[in-house]
Image (cartoon, rainbow, N blue to C red; front, side):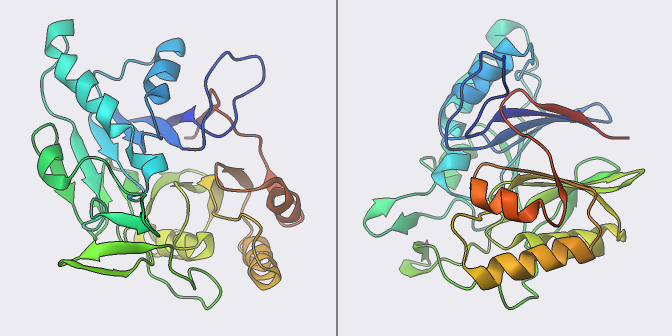
Length: 278
């Protein structure tokens, strides 16, 4: 599997790429081309072009959760997919893979923080696969579906509200999910924001993949000035789990990265980074 960071808050040194507070990863495995999240704007397309990555041939677009910094790029992606036939690329619709609650309206106070495009509109442009169950994209790469919440220190507070059956409810981000890849050295877990908790995600991935080794985690950890208990227990879990490396990015602040470096080796991340696993 080869993974390229198309969008992050940062960019890799000496690469003239764009950054924004969002996330997008381009993944290639077993002949399949997968976008995992699409950031906040169209810069994932601009960065892909600079990196000589052709997004016209995308097979899957997997979404980690429904917040704007991971879904608003679907608007320019619709335009790009619509242009594909004119650019002599295949006209087959990419599969849009997400949790069943991903495209419900989401709010923080009066601010709308969810997807601009509704599920009904998206169906006109993509082959929709909405599921809360695991879905194997390739033989070794799996969309994890709804993450089991098994500990007492993660995902304790809702983030705003979401619209459910005509009423606003507290949003505990049941739609938050991740990808996991079964490499020869153990699991590689790719996250968006880890609203469900990175420790919960790792445990869920181990269960789904029947693999206890974790070679790497790359993605956002939603550790922005976390409370002391959450940081302490997260560090203890990562250390006890013998995770080989952690590429923390996006919604992970510098203080948290420094703290986590006491438990696991931290790798630098930014738009332009490419990692390969066998």
